[in-house]
Image (cartoon, rainbow, N blue to C red; front, side, top):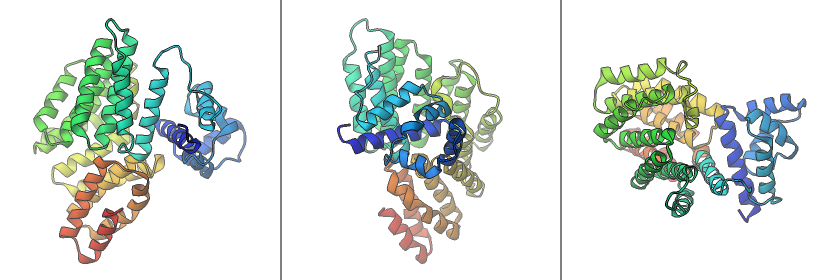
Length: 378
């Protein structure tokens, strides 16, 4: 963080992650800030400048903390650090600084993908693990479990799946030692997602069964049904795949519970709709998948139109359109990609995108092949 520009960009990614967690678009955040402060001078463009690291919110910190539901002193300290006016926070917990660094790395992944920060996330995790001593307190073990989970996710996004699995196995282990059931559930859920995407259907279903047998709260159970639905679709089990996705959809509004772990905040309509679309695609029904992916594009566009999530759904929608041979719609989808690709370097999602682009070159009309090649080199 010695470079002021790097510090400001990191703060911007952190702020964008807070906004997305609150499920607000930049325009919605600007409107709420104006209401909270009693002024009408803030625009979406200014919020965008903050998130790009071009400016810092300054006097808006108090209103930001109120709208985004974070402690004022935490946000003000983050702004001061980005400005270079403060040292890293001194917390009573010996690993507070480590957790903050990991949080900023995760925010960067959400905004720009995991490729460039995967090694840094592993380094933070390994450094914390190296400090474990015999009889260590559970709070330290919980921190190591959380850092392993974060590193695993960033590695997964960078398409380093073998390393990601190792990190999640460790997250589950240290979560168990710390008595943190939520972290154990999270590790199992992520391992099941990776198994689904890697085509290991039997393993994915076994992990879903293991999770279901742990008495997890409703929100985690909903996630389990989403993973189960995709695994069953991969196996060609159409009735049971649809039943699993149907149970997840019907339980979305009723699944909130005080027992839900903090990490389950992102389980929402976007998540369920995306899985519904993926199941339709796996079942050979791209005509059903396309309108669902269009909905995910709308939902993502209101939150972060050029972040990692936008790339995931853009690549998935393109995949579905190519399978339908809907070439005019494919062209429109291609034209939406450059701004996202300039912002995101996620190997996991770019790999899927490259597969769809190769299919255009192989099966599509000649007039579209040149555009596909141009996007492929982006």
